[in-house]
Image (cartoon, rainbow, N blue to C red):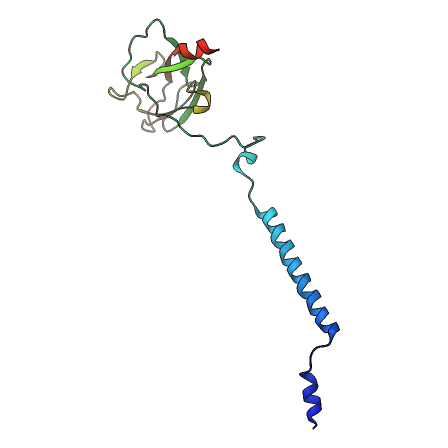
Length: 183
C-alpha cells in the first residue's frame, strides 16, 4: 500500500469538475426560482370580484353612516312632500323561508322611513306591536347609491305548521333639495 494513492483523493478538484458543480448549482437555483414563480402564479387564488363577474375591482362596501330613519315602527300618515313606494313578496312567505326585495329610488331621493306590514291587506306591524306571523327584517341601503337603493330581507319566523303570509314594505321618501339644485 502506498500513501500516494490515498493522497490523490485529497488533491484539489480539477478545473472541469469545479465548473460542472457550478453549472449544476446554477441550474438548481434557476429551477427552484422558476418553480417558485410558477407556483406563485398558478396557486394564487383569483380575487373575489373576478369570480363574481366584475371587470375590475369594485372596492369595499363600507357604510358611511348608520341608517338614520325609522324601520318597522308604528305607521304614521305621510306628509304631502313625501313619495311612497311599495315592495311585496311574491305570494305568501312560508314559515322559515326568506325573501329578498330591492328598490332603486330616483337620484334625488332620500329615504324618510320604512314601514312593515303582513297579510293580503297589508296589516300594519311594527317591532313594538309585533307582526303576525312574526318576521325578522334586515335592511341595507347602499353608500354607493347615496342611500337611494334599499335592500330588505324578510324571514318568516312562524312555526312550521302555520300558513305563510304576504310581507310588504312601505318606503316613504322625499326629494333632496340640495342635490336637485346642484344638477
